[in-house]
Length: 309
Image (cartoon, rainbow, N blue to C red):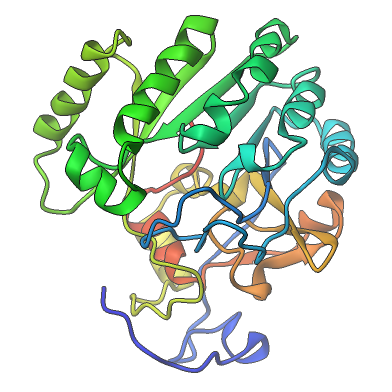
């Protein structure tokens, strides 16, 4: 995929039809199984590849508080949601993160995506009591490559060992763990994953932790040239079962912009207001989700998903 500079054609022109006028592929949301919260784009790191554009002090998406998330948790429970997930930025930059987790984990299992560095490590005393929560809290820690120099070229000096140290602390407390990594088309996946497992063993961690691989999603507002996904594509190359695996078929994400909480179709499209589906979860379940965003193509081609399963 190559980056190209094109003007946004706008919702009315390109939401339901491709540039050639064909009906665009879409997903119908069958039910809300998983609710995500974007805790804010502020982060202690400034990774140049971050698809959220996160960095210290960033406020493209504002930091969330318990008061922000509580109404959506309560509404999601009425919709029989099965789990809650939290991403950023770095979620533990949000001061209320431990309170948010304490509230959410009363009702459903929780997943937290984190870089595993200082914001989390320095708050282990707040996190430790949550092992007693009614529902499990699982942490997915980002370690881009099994090579410390390559990892730290993007995330900063010392972050490689810091992430593994934090993982070991969380493991010793009894929390579930997984590891998120960068995937490259020309990699030897077996060799890469074995390198990761060697690091896990070296740090006293189980070497059978789930490794979650992600392609390059590019920074926010990137105009990326990808094939357009038509209705024909979705019925020819996908089945009802595989379409049901698209995140927008079973999940939503809540973000905070300009002091207001809004519901977006999934975790990958918060840079495009076409995917703002309303101010309530119930409202957000009604529209078809059109596969217009360039990151939709990653889901179409690779089955990429931010979910743990």
